[in-house]
Length: 66
Picture 1 (cartoon, helix red, strand yellow):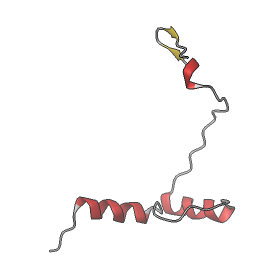
Picture 2: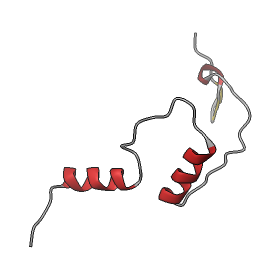
Picture 3: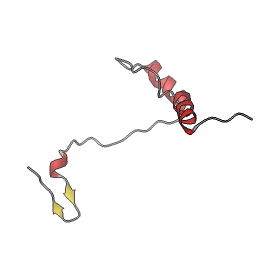
Picture 4: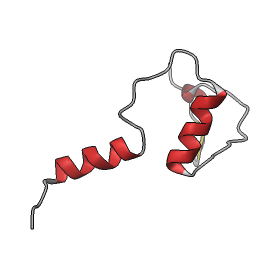
């Protein structure tokens, strides 16, 4: 029985999910469909607010850095 290293196993797993493909300049519907077919996952985040990390609320109140 042959064996492979952890690094080889990682590379095989990443390639199987399409993470070794070249990046696309302009993603298309075909790109989305191919990604969905490979991963079987579609995640839609409903976050529509952009906030600077320097003014985020922490458990101790508002944290601001300069």
